[in-house]
Image (cartoon, rainbow over all chains, first blue to last red; front, side, top):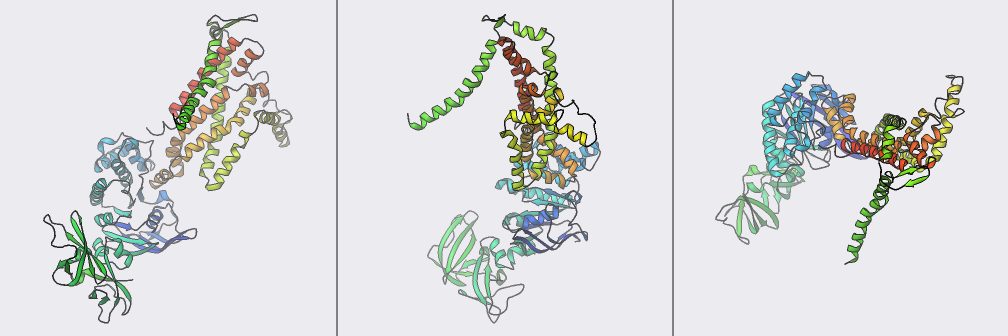
Length: 346
Length: 283
């Protein structure tokens, strides 16, 4: 895929606080890329810089190779879906959606036709005459999306658009956004703090913290192959077992010498974490021996905590109606595939 | 009854009682008084509509009222015209500067009305600041009498006096516009001009209407300003009412004229609340 937008060495500070430090990021044409990070990680600042709402202190923002960092907001071929929708309260749904075309001087008949098309696309065809105050959260969200896609921007920026919706509706909207993305094939840059949302939607996830990009890759990449402690901890309740890199490349931990995969294994003697996802661990007679400390039923999965030589290891097992063959206090063996154990620098 | 409940009772009684006692009852008194009549110097207490008939049949009252309404509408428009840019500028400022300037703007409200009027009179007068400046600039040879002791003077003075009352509601309505709406407009390709005319202006319109209603109501009830700077030709309805109480000693007729003015003010306030303020914002 061709690169649509490229950030090169972008930095930003608000007063003494450095919010972005030398960000390099290439957004590919047509992809659904998610910037994921906790609050304060600088993810929204990146989006606002691309949109033109905030100016970068240093660095370049290249669109098709041309630096647009100094272009005003209204000259950038990007449209934004704002966190709290930012619908114009004094305009109808049709007025809101048609706004981008109207300010460009598009003829009234064309505006009307395009508004109709886009509203059909977001399944709000019959809501054209309503005002934003008469819409539910999910409907407002779809109006905001329709308003952003009507001008056929090169890139659609979505700033935590689902944060205000309840869980059920959020799931629906995730599906819906994906469907729209497949339909219109425009590049989506989606900012969120919700790991599950990022995994469910993105082609690529860019994990950020403290103004830096920690890892960029596919959802399976960042989920199964974390490169840092932060990323390993950020997705789910991973097991991070402290250890040092041994001579043979294995990680020496309190629970034994573990064979770990890694993209770049730290040097011998370096402090590392052996990372094993709880659902990758099997419980049986063989493997690392431990004692079950607790078993908690959590719907689809049951989580058992096993004490292995003083290290608490979480194991996630698929729940069963007739219960699992493990008891608190029972001795069990834990095993996993070598590929499921990763080493990250501590 | 606990002390809390007694306090609650007292507070509720005061909340309803004070306006009834100090506003509604006097107004009803006026209404009643307007139905009495005067012959010579004698007051008759039988109820009649003769005062209202006099208002509608005698030739001077309706033209004065019309002239006053026009004047006050002009005052309202001037105040909006000057107040909007000021309010817009204020709301575009950031942080402490914004509120410091806003406070400075409200300082004139702390000064005595009379003092301000004298000050304005001396500015507008034949030998005043305005005329001397114009002469010094060589724009005129003789002091103009255009600015003082006529309706123009009333118009200018009322506008200057009431300007803060226009700026505040407009400023508040501008402040309430979420900043992300402006970002959304720009994001969708709107220029600053388009953002102003399509988003900011329509969303601040309720504030503008409130401001206009505010200024209009304050201006139309004013009799002191026309009295002091209006001279002979600056005759307004307020002065007519004043003269009925003060010089003609026809209180019932004055009361009738007041009732008519109150009706007018109620209409203005109703228009202001219907199209301005909070309710017009969210449909």
